[in-house]
Image 1 (tube, rainbow, N blue to C red):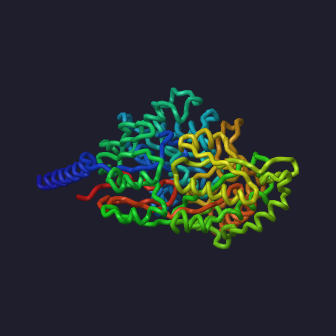
Image 2 (image 1 turned 45 degrees about the horizontal axis):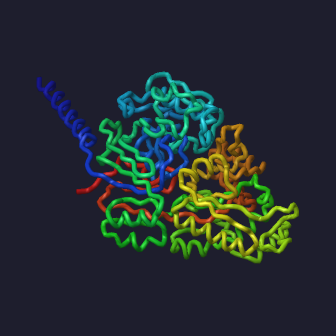
Image 3 (image 1 turned 135 degrees about the vertical axis):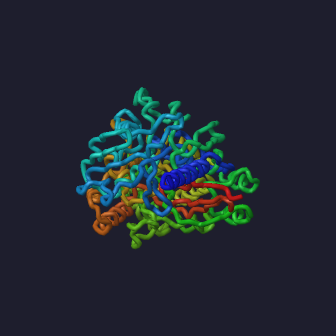
Length: 541
């Protein structure tokens, strides 16, 4: 009888602990307001914007998540597959995930292995306009032996492959809602892309386009948290307005604070302000289909005529790093020996002359031997003061060489939509987040050029083709030891540094601002953005 009493007592204690743990989910408190650029879609598989990632991190779950330190942690999966736990086969070709049986969609339906399989099938369907299938195309098949077990069979063993499932594109979508949708209708504007049902810590309550989104706590979330009642995202393109909203208390976190605003942000007593090197860089991508950009000496000339140091010092107030390549300095594979192109107008003029550019008719604009005028447009975000000013500086300095540049400032939804997706640009300037792996297959491999034939899938927007780079990228994916991969990735950096499918302007040093009483604020430098752990955020009393 005494033994039975002890058992009952233990059960009672366990029950009370469980209820207490559940209560943390059941009593979320407080609201945090984020302000950032406009959002085009909330379909994670189609998203190409870090601003969308900020919101999607709250709505959706992934098999695994990437922390601010670059480590993988479980999300829908109960543990990260490894050789040690048997989740990865000895030959590196079979990955097994066990799903949390408590996971539910926001409409109350259970998350199952079939949802994971369906997500992969939608990514790989040739009729869906996904930005990239890289990594997912290494899967031969997926089996679902039971409702909570997913077994992925790969065609080859590759390094860093699990990171694909930690990206925004790896968010799991609900099969029961999407299964009857024609893949051709799987678009950024589909109703389910604008009113998504996820399994994350927050539910989308309301979205007024180009104005605001409201996320409300999911009190049936399977994981830790959420501890906030609401997260509000306000869509504001202009970074000056974002700063004003911080000052007035209309916003708690601003995503676009830039160097010249640093001192004003630091003067706001209620905020913590930190400078964190990031893997985001601003670049100017050439459309290499344009005949005026065919000769690499032309591209090199424009790079020499871009005053990166001045841009960082004068426009960014020193808060940034002049960029030499697309590989972030925070990554282990970064080649310290590659330096940004020097600002040298004489060298630029010399290269243009060598490439056959001269002002034949005396109108101040260069021409080549085919009679083409050296004139083109730069597309970038309207309202982003830094990018607008960089475009103006490029226009001014390149104009001194006889290059005529027109400026095309577009709303972010247009820039990242029709203009970028369909390569409707001469040159386009925007920010890009280097992944936590140095593998930049999607940017530089020729198979990743968006074309009508592949449904405009891929992120090699420049249209860059180099057989040597292709072979190095392919080889790098098969090598599982970082020591073996390092020389390959540094060779790639050297080649693209010489050939310049894009001009690398600067890497961000993020100005991360948040309320002093926001606990567990851990902004990350990688593709998972500042909100990777939104489920942990809580306001101190």
